[in-house]
Image (cartoon, rainbow over all chains, first blue to last red; front, side, top):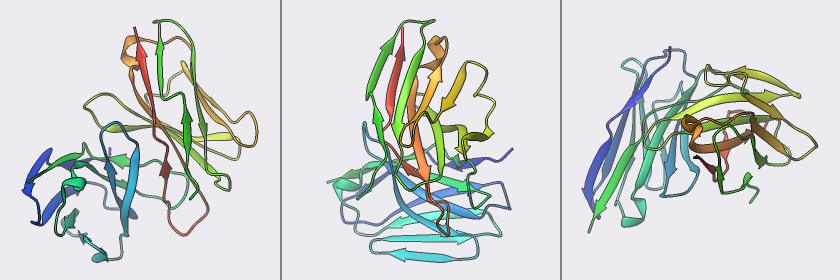
Length: 112
Length: 114
């Protein structure tokens, strides 16, 4: 079945860039997403990318998609302590009403 | 900004009891979902619901689980006879008819089965 993998931990210094990586197995993925989960909270959509795009930028966030390698990354510029959270990569293979497959999440720790 | 809400935020129950987790999706959304996240593990899909019926369900969603949209606003997940391993965070999500399948997630209900 479909699988999404991420490294589990990442530590960066405040002000540096963070790069969170994700790999997926389903080549028919249509949309790929990054969600943020702060302690005790729900999942907050950060950004998404459609599979025919290579890159998407949204303020401090840059998403890169390498469809050939099935690799997705999220770059956070000028990382702040408020960015400390778990970041989930997710993919779906359909436009409507289909389930997401989530990665295990990357815990980002931002050190002062 | 519209949001998905869930109640209760925390539910504690005895093994074997029935629980109903409630969700109020965003009002003009058409697709509804339940996911669960066992502590420290991945977020797992349980079920999706559209047009008053289940459109997809995972292996986790066995006969102990059921979903319902009893009125125009609520979406519920019922676990008929809870087991210890049902302890998890349960997230409701909804999506509309936009050009992409953005699912908006609720804050979750933490279910603890004793």
